[in-house]
Length: 512
Image (cartoon, rainbow, N blue to C red):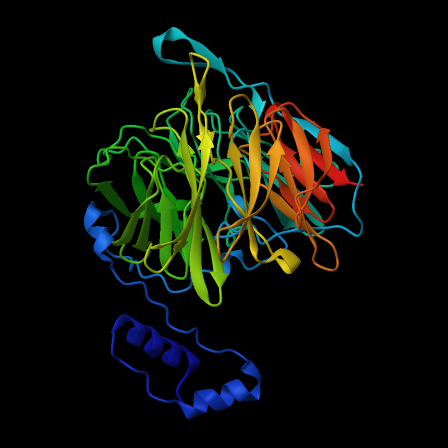
């Protein structure tokens, strides 16, 4: 009787060879009927599109021994008891939702943890910027149970530390690990090796800039890999975006424009290969958004507004789409009638001010545009910094009674500090409703559901307010000031949420 392993191997070989069909194996089918209740996944293939001709690329291999084949792209994020990456999964679709029994009327702070105060950062020309502590964009915490009966909040801070806090009390559950550089993006946790945290630096301060694998159980550095790469076509050695863990690999796009592929081990990350690319007639490189993954394919959005699909096994680009401007909001994958779609939005950066921010739905198989909406937005400068308008937060996919919606936030849809939250019909792209926000947001929205699957939206803003919104009609039910500046994205837990602010504070709040 053929082994299950043999059947799977034959299937994978056939997927790799178009036109090959696996022979019928009745013994395997009988075993399934007897109670395995497992079926082989249906093959899914994205072919190379003519649009990929816009990309000039090469793959550089550090490891020519380890096969780079990817087969199982979803197992790492199946455990629903933990949130271990930005937006909860490789799809960046935030499948983790809060739950409420009744409509709340207020937000109560359960505890506050203060990070260190941070240090000055010297800018070009001798001026200085103080990053303080707390968290910036995207700054989402993770939640995990490394010990029985203990939930921990793990968060990276602008003060350079990775903190582990008891989710119930807000007290430190472990010694913080100091990376010596401000952490602006969201840390990620390894699903296989307890205690391992991956952190990238978006700001150089006193240590080399790159990505680190840290063991929080004994506060040790396992591996460090610089982003000052001799192959980089852009000399900007940072990593704000979050990686994706697929099989034994970790895929991590960087602000130098390279997509890195690592082998995960208990001793940290080992380089495998990397994709170096540039897009014709577009000199803007660098990836600040997080990679999204469907099956064995990766999707990235970069500073030049390029949306690119590539094969995770070979790193070969398969299609390209021009999104209009710098795209820092992460692509979100939504499976609709068994078809994968991407929701992407850009900001107003490289174009004139005011400019146009686009929200688009793409067919993930080809990169073709299903629908587009445009929002006129303004950028702002104070002489030292440019604060871009448009979309910087990552969209929220509706579920339950509002499964036909996708919700996106835009900065400065009018002059000043305001913003707008727009709910779109997934199928048509029509606006179902818009919520005018007094303060704009970089923080990504999260969802809460009642028992009858009614959607409520929770989102923070740059003036420290948290808003609680009816997902059916856009009515604002609560708008309450909690902190100073919420650039970071929150995570839900039951009727609570965890969020870090600029300044020094990490909060646990409850909806009451």
